[in-house]
Image 1 (tube, rainbow, N blue to C red):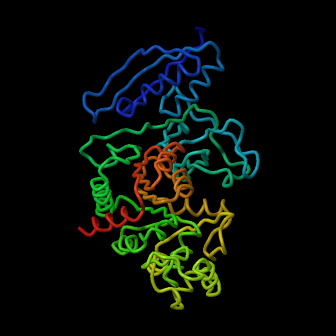
Image 2: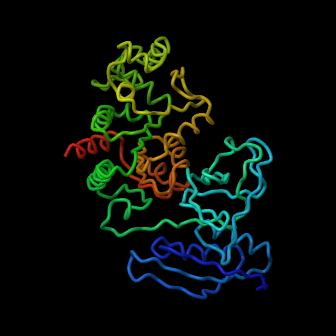
Image 3: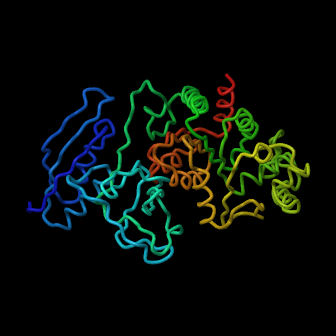
Amino acid sequence: MGTYSRVIELRGHIIDSLTFPKVLDEILDHGADYETEEISIGRTRRDASRARIRVTAPSEEVLDRVLAHVRRLGAEAIEEGDAAVLPAPADGVFPEGFYATTNLPTRVRIEGRWLDVEDLCMDSAIRVRGGSDRPRCVKMYEVRAGDPIVVGYEGVRVEPQRKAPLERGLFEFMSSTASPEKSKERIIRDIAGEMRETKRSGAGKILWVLGPAVVHTGARESFCRILDAGYVDVVFAGNGLAAHDIEASLYGTSLGVSITGGKPVPRGHEHHLRAINAVRAAGGIGRAVEAGLLKDGIMYRLERKGIPYVLSGSVRDDGPLPEVITDSVKAQARMRELFRGVSMAVMVATMLHSIAAGNLLPAAVRTVCVDISTEMVTKLADRGTHQSLGLVTDAEPFLRELAARLRE
């Protein structure tokens, strides 16, 4: 082994989060070796641990590559200096070597002080303007020529996620696990408890990410009961959820199938188009509510209660409804704006919207993903939302049971 080496340090809950073995694996996987110079393990699960590891590599390039990967897991090179900053060369362009963020709690060292990075989300850069403007994650479309952007990995700390004691709640022991065989009744009961505690403590907002299956499966009324009970603060969905909810309100069908009878109705396949057309003629969902055209359902309640929502478009949308944001960059910007202050997210029966929302949320947001497909639930975690609790079940029984639990 060559003579290039550097000492790194890990601090925090590095044992129960499996960060320590992950760091060792990264070192070996990238062609380097290690020696644990010092390790101090917390006596209880509440105590932090600390480890100093010497990384030795055959070349400076290999060493830099190792350090880049282990820093993402929270490792800190000893005697770190301030974060390096370079100006963005043009609008919408990060400088070469920019630091690519994760969704884990991150700090940067500026003028000798460690500052928390705000608006955390993965696959972004860190802008550091100084003064009263705190360091924050920015997407490429947000950056402007000359903006100071963090480059490299020096002066950046990432805090590994910890697993807290079992007795403290659902999310501390389910941890990113798809649960087709676990007791759904118990999980839903605990989700209801987490939601009540979120509201009781004022810890933050509850975000819902919904797919059109919420309407198709007959779960619409159950979600409306949850909404009426005050457990919905933000909704993210697409044209489909809104169109079929409005179809159900105007025609009593979803995808042309009777909500009450469960059978297709004559010419029912046209109903979603006629519903969209009626709302467009009224000037939008809000105006359809004001005019008395729309009198019940999810979108009716969101408008009446003033609950913010984002409907993001896709190339497959019919219409779309006037409120649908067809520019994906604008939709993402609006989502990030509304996601500030969210502490819990519930994603029901929508793969693409769930992954989109998950990529914009910090890892600290307690996240539930509900889908009939195990592949969908695990894919969310695979795409970076490691904090997600996966529950494999249909939307209707989940929302019906949750609505009942929230009334207890």
